[in-house]
Image (cartoon, rainbow, N blue to C red; front, top):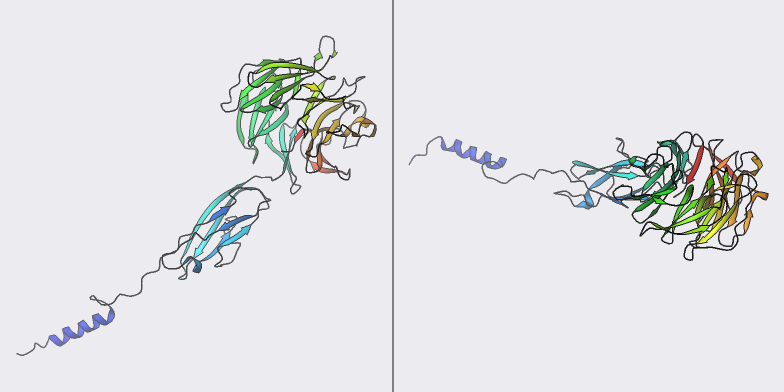
Length: 435
C-alpha cells in the first residue's frame, strides 16, 4: 500500500507539538501566588512607655515556607518603611507620642510578589497624666509626667468647673454653673456624655460607690445620687448645710458640711454626714472643725478632713476620722493658716495648700505625716510656691501644685524640697488630680 505524501508533514507537526509541551505533553512550572500578610501586637494596648512586639510569623505563602518570607514595617503608615527587608518576623517598637497609630506590614515571597496588611493601635495621648481644671478658662489641661509635655486647653468644660474624679477610664467633671456632670474619656478627652442634676443645685464634688455616683450640692444642702449604668439621677439626699467635699471610704459616703450661716454672716460648727450607700440614708453626723472644705484618704483608710477656718480668727486644722468607728482619731492636726486643698501620697505624706486673701506670705504648701500626724511644714515654716497656689495632687514622689494667678503648674519634690515651675497650663488653674 502506498503511503499518502501528506503523512510525513502530519508526523512532523506532531513532533513539534510534543516538543513544545502542547497537545497533551508535559506541563511547565506552576505560576507563583502572592503571600498573605498577617501579624499580631503584644500587648494589645499600652502607652508611650510600652515596648510593643509585632509578630508576622502568621504570614503564609502557597509555595514558600514562612521562614523564607521577608517582611518590613511602617510604624506610622506614612508611606516610608521604617525597617529593611528581613526574614526575622518579630520586631519591637515604642511610640514617643500618643494617639491612634496605624501599622503597615509588607510581606515578600521568594518570587518577588508582595502583600500588605494594616492594624490600628490606640495609645493614650499621655501616659502619666496630671489633669488640671482651668477655672476662668473653663478648660481641662494635661501635664504628662512621663515627658514633661503640657497639653493646654485640651478639652472645653462647662460653666464654673470645680472638681473631677476618675472612674473606669472616664473623667467626671463637676460644672457648678451648669448644674451638671460632664464625662470625658481619659485617654483623649473626647466627650462621653453629660448628666444633668437640676437647676439651682450648684454641685461641688463627686465620689463613687459601686455603680453609684454621689454629688454634693452646695445650694440645696443635698447629695444627688447618679446611677452610673443609666445616667439617671435619683431622689436627692438631705444632708447638712453647705455640703462641699465628699469621699467614699470603708463602704460609706462622707460629706463635709461647711455650715455657713448667711443670715448671721459666719461659719457655724462644721460637720460630716455619713450616708449608707445601700439605703442612701444619712446614718450619722460627726462634728468637726470650722469650714470642712477638702478630704483625702490615707494608706490606713482613714479620712482626713481639711477644716479651713473662717479666713479670720479661726485658723485651719485637719481632722481625722476612722470610718469603721465613725469617730475622730486623736487631736486635730493644727497646721494653722487657711488650708483649702489636700492630697495624700502612697507613702502617707499629706500635702496641703494654704491660701490667704490678704497675706501673700501665708500662701504655700504645708506638709505632715498622715500616719503619725507629725507636722513637717506648717504655717510657721510654709513652703512658698508661686504667687497664689490653689490645688495639689501627689504622684511619684512629687506634689503638683496649680497657681491660680500665674496660670502655671508647679512641682514640689518631697526628697529634696525643690520647687519648680513646670510651665503655663491655662487660665486660672485650680483643681488638679493625678490618677
